[in-house]
Image (cartoon, rainbow, N blue to C red):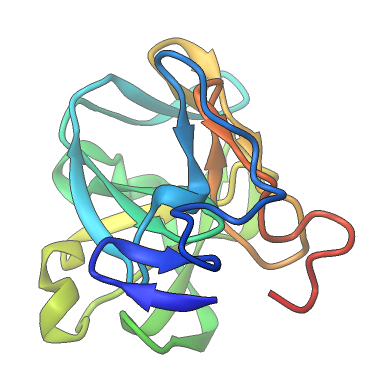
Length: 177
């Protein structure tokens, strides 16, 4: 494995031999770059906690990183921030910096630490400032009307949409990636 200008190469190939070949309209997570990059998303993104709409936007950002499904970040202007309350704790991303966490409170229920943001991201990821992402394993997230599946694994926040092919980081057997 070596790193080329377009991302990782595997013995001269653009994708590793175990990667699923994308079909028409599909994206391979093995074509995503490392370090990650931010791309705009124009499809409608909706986040719901039960019957309560937490967010709706056509101005989301996707962070693309090798081996992982995209993570969607929604502008705070399009998030009903009255339903979010700061939660304790932080984590560190080598690319984006320190993440802080949010609880979602809706319908009399607290959904603990299911959203996060980068309040002071690294310069390369300054575009994520004033954006929030949600863990689709713990709250209903939709892209273009289709419910998103959660990235496998306990900590990952990727959004698996129908056009994404892998294998994905977090699936059984991927601990060493």
